[in-house]
Length: 359
Ligand code: AMP
Ligand code: MG
Image 1 (cartoon, helix red, strand yellow):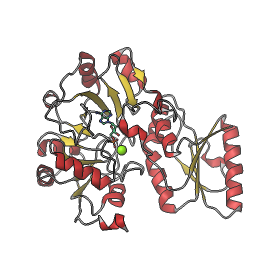
Image 2 (cartoon, rainbow, N blue to C red):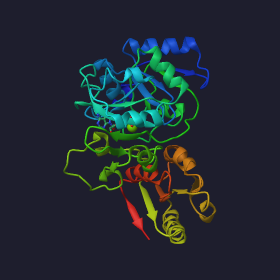
Image 3 (cartoon, rainbow, N blue to C red):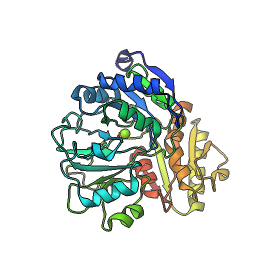
Image 4 (cartoon, rainbow, N blue to C red):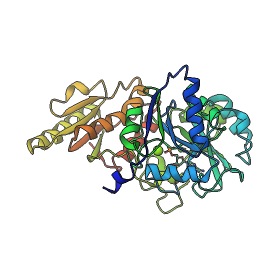
């Protein structure tokens, strides 16, 4: 009830051509943000919910629209390198090399912030997270909006991140001014976050830019132990505050079954058969290689293990589809693939509340 009452804004839903966004549409969207309003827009990672990053009221509106705790900082999106110095007090040489290699792209870097960035945007922190997205619509919107867009993922807090404009509409219709529909995203997982405020760069969230790619440019890189472990650093102040919150969660309980492929299929089939016998409906998330081996349940082929970009692109969508279908339980294979396994498992583990069955 309370949730519905907050859906009071008229949300414009506008299609834009990814390669060639209509100038009038982008000017209008930019004007909404300049006036303190909110516009959801496509990026190459997931859809973002954008507001003026330099306007504390706009940031507060973002938190309210998402139902997100206000100590969970927002990423500031820029469209060119000149925009970095005014918001980042200190940019180490290593970060410049990383920017040269991966910007525009699915990489966020954390720096000490300047006074230009309101604490409402930085979640009360003295640091700022910055990204330059690789998407013509996102870049055009940033330029039309004055250069700095604060944008978390455009989902209701706790739900899987949106990889299509329809997902944004499900979660935020009536709560924001405009949704720009640029079609399905390419990557499907949020950006890699690297913290440059300590001596050695530290990965706080894995993404499409994986450890190997970071090491190739930076040499030494550390990873936050909390990325794959629910208990690591529980009593410490989390470095990426968002990592503390329940995230990406489907409505049905999700269990990850991990082990040798044959044993995994066997165990999931066993569990699913028991559930179905009890009258429950079951969703199963499987790789292309094994999807044909599950006789009961709604089986979703999430993509091939040999092209794990496909698995990354489909993960959030599959979780949302199971919500839509109203399944009672979800079982998933583990996806410890070489290139994106860390990023995929980081999201899947959190969606499962770290419930893993080793077989
Ligand atoms: P989202 O855009 O929804 O994927 O969330 C952005 C995430 O970026 C937050 O949940 C934090 O984990 C991280 N983040 C943003 N700003 C900072 C910062 N200044 N320090 C550490 N982590 C940050
Ligand atoms: Mg998010």
